[in-house]
Image (cartoon, each protein chain N blue to C red):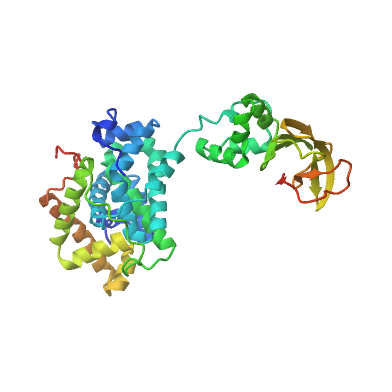
Length: 205
Length: 219
């Protein structure tokens, strides 16, 4: 699944994600392939966790990356990192899918639909393993009610009112708990060494 | 009453109910401070993706995606031609690999390997096309059809015959001997929905095919 050894694409290997995306905006398919190789595993893992079906997950990832290809020209750098954008688009499409298809959202994944284990990430994606570790670490620090609300909202795609019903809580409580959970997560991510502003997927950070 | 900025983290999670989502979107359009807030919380939300169990995307997904984004540059038969039937106008909007797959399905590339590429282009430029597997292509336009056949010689004492079948009734449309490339203008007019079939006949001039066709294609 990787693009091969890092030396294989001398044109793109030293570019930041913003640089790659700028090339994508000009129709550069090599730059696009490189972004795909960097983030497709994260996107697919996310999509599969949300939609719980391998074919639907593949559709979601395909649509998300096509949207990146088509909209790269209008990407505003003030929105943040391209990786955030890619994963946000993926998440949006995954949640839309799970809501549209009325899929059950909280039982364990159907047998046979678990993802293929990718094994440890290749060298050029060493950041992926480290990031996973740090994010899980940050989540572990959150109080249970906070973590629960984040997981149900993000991975099961429940709206605030659906959460209120499910957790038997007033809507106002759900809203303030969601706000608190996200603020707490932001703080814990910082403590765990996950930087959100800078290039945190290269070996220099 | 809550302020919109209290809803921004939930918006980043895509967890707002529709009325709240619309209110936030409307506000974001006019408030840069809140847009910056959203960018920050989207980055926070995106990290949750990394908490999902790792799963490898299918390799075919990469190929499919890279094919889908290729621009249309390599399909030779779709170069600017003054005359193009409805079939090719539609196909011109299709990406190159899909076009190649389509051409393969029609057997046109197969034909062009054995015959002159220019003649293939002429065939394709002349109108709509349907492939008769094992025989060749029928290209038709404005009711006039031509069979471009590339087939071995008919068995001794026999001849190939083309038929136009409309509403189940076959009408004889011309004969040929085969053995190399043949261009046969069908002497029956054709229309959408007709089937062109080729049979092996002991002699021309029969009113009905003597057996099952060796190939047929629907216009």
